[in-house]
Amino acid sequence: MFDNLSDKLDRAFKVLKGHGKITEINVAETLKEVRKALLDADVNFKVAKQFTDTIKEKAFGQNVLTSVSPGQLLIKITHDELTNLMGGQKEDIFLGGNPTIILMSGLQGSGKTTFTGKLANYLKTKKGKDPLMVACDVYRPAAIDQLQVLGEQIGVSVFSNKEEKNPVKIAEAAIKQARENGNSVVLIDTAGRLAVDEMMMNEISDLKKAIKPNEILFVVDAMTGQDAVNTAKAFNDRLDFDGVILTKLDGDTRGGAALSIKSVVNKPIKFVGTGEKMEALDVFYPERMSDRILGMGDVVTLVERAQEQFNEEEARKLSKKIAKNQFDLNDFLSQLQQIKKMGNIKDLVGMIPGVGKAIKDADIKDDAFKHIEAIIYSMTPTERNKPETINGARRQRIAKGSGLNIAEVNKLLKQFEDTRKMMRMMNDKNAMAKMMRNMPKMPGGPQ
Image 1 (cartoon, rainbow, N blue to C red):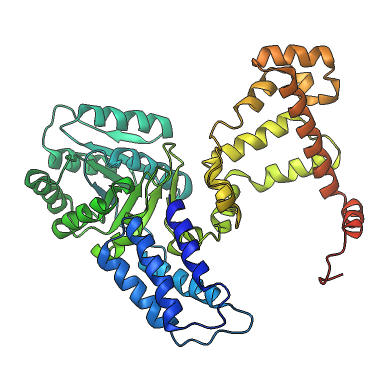
Image 2: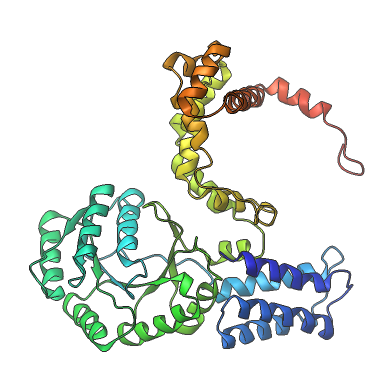
């Protein structure tokens, strides 16, 4: 998401390259391109105009420091305004109440049921809660079945009653059961339609009045662009919801909904869905999203995802194995599997500052590690523990077992050995010091 917008904003700021100061003419020229980029991203016209007017007002007349170019100054102002446009700071969901009752709303196909599962998983694994999911979509039996499957997948209880056709009665019975069983959060998945209609609005309004939820979340498909903002307004007028959930941000979307929705309905974006897996749910940080839009990466989110997958005890054990030169292919495979759990590979690499633009056209598939896994799984336990025992005949057998050629096996073993050498060097302070001493001196830089 946002790749196209990022490219156009980058080109817009190049208009100021080489200018010694900010003037009304060069700012106007740049902001004209910025406004066009926002409109192409399906941002609401009024929002785009207000946004560029605010930047112009803040930029014009500012003195440019000798160490800062006009382009850099305008990027800084744009970054701050993008952050404000998307809400300024992250907003948490409310988790008070006994139990906390969270009501999902949105159109059919927006991803409500999947998000309900993701939120339940998030509350269970990261907040230590014991959620109960409630199937209140009485029109789609498949939605009830889907919620049951998700519940089994993440180990969360699901309340459903296919015989009952009144969602209010289902919700009330579920809340009663949650109190009896000690569930701390009740997540109510509701029915949707293909478009906003009076029957749906009346039904969810009745649910709101009857159960008095602590939090109402509006789930919207980010790929629907400006339609998402219009739908959000219609729901907010009736429900006065507390926050927005943008799903399918990993799809081919222009990002207009993320940039417009806060200004139009004055409600914060609380979470974004970035994939189909139950772990593919991120708390929405406006400042971090601004960083990514302007090509600055998102190192904080990258580090947080890594910390979630790598615990300190495992890191200590691994460090000891590396120090003793005992890092083997089992450890190598374990590291790859933990990286996979962090999310979409291209998305992760794009969080590194400066790398996003370089790889935007690269075809980095999510199954990039499957060949490596196939090769290692074709090895015997001895071969994984002692890669040095893998001779020519063993390589032929491993290649045949993994369905790949021997060149692929050789390539993996070479990569593994290079990784092991690098890890050993990083653990050896003397070797690291020697490497630093032998590095060529940078002309004009620190010696």
